[in-house]
Image (tube, rainbow, N blue to C red; front, top):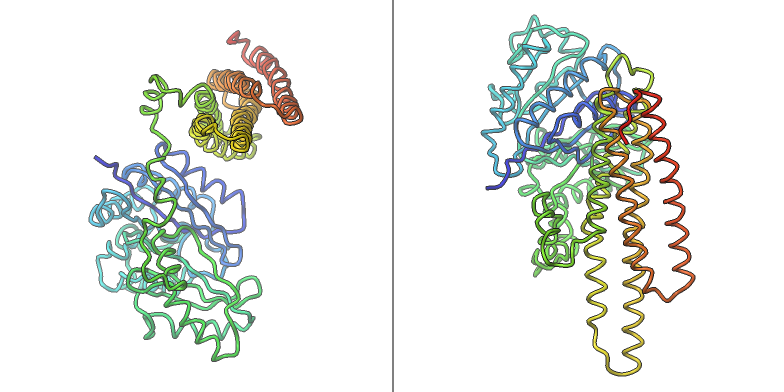
Length: 508
């Protein structure tokens, strides 16, 4: 049975202070089972949009932790920006992605709303499919008057009474929580600095003033350009090309043109395909013609599948993939130690550095996970080259060139794995030296795994170099590997010294 997957796209009223943005990201990433797939910060709007995925209970927990963090770090009395907002954690939508219904997302919104009100004492409004009142289906109705206006009316106007929590605003403001279908945040910039033109076009385009169904729009100034800022709430019924062409036509009426457009966050693949088909007039197009769709069966295997394949009689995956797997595990441990360090008063002096380590370690882990498959594919490429026919002299020459190219690639892939593993080893030493002392054995394990990965990857580099005939390439790769191994020995000594100096532990 497929895993239940929910997407959450919280909008926070901070787009300028990188430390606050990093803290918000970390509050989400700290929840196990959550994957942050995108984040977008806009200084003019003073707003950050984060997109993350996971199973429903994990997503709800991550959403709560991010609201709690935003409430602690963002003061709405000091907030200014182009985008409408009523709270630090302004909007928290849940979107069904896989094996989850909208009804289940509505239940998530209601449960989170009750928890936020109870534990954080923040007013909560439910919107879209979770709305308890028809007038609260549309977000703009809830945001009317923004934070300043809501602060003045929340106590006196019964229509502004929240669905959960107190009828008064603190410095964190209020939060809007809901469930909805996938939404596309899409902005079109005009080659003009006259914001009145953007506002006029937004008035024409948006549904609330007689425009296109499933389009919400407003005109703002961003980076010196007049911008039509939009949310497209159902791209299947109101397609992106339809919106763009209406804006283009309206812009021409005012003597301006579309300068460029942008996405905020993620977009469903189908929306881009539909736009491409429309503009290219591909009337006979079928999704099976997309190359990537043919590669769906080439997904990175799960942990269980990978170990089963590693134990099989097949030559791939082999040692190079195992090296990447070990290095990825090391990166995961580095991130864990850093996460156990941030937010602790005892380690406040290294908090910022540890947050940076988390991001780098997560990036390294992602690269190494992909390297597991890349290494197997590289060896498969060598085997395919050797299976080319040997007939005429010319064909043999071509076959030899193909084999040499495949061998060079097969040597470079584990070299890249070793280079990634070296970065992880550096980070392991750093978190061992500065991180939470209670997790020092985890840092030591990370260092050992990373060093082992470098040794294993190096063996794979050398075996492939033996078949390379190009002396220049062989020397270049050999020197790069030697440099990695030299640094590895330095860091191995360093981790021993750190463990001895820091905890008098003889762990390695």
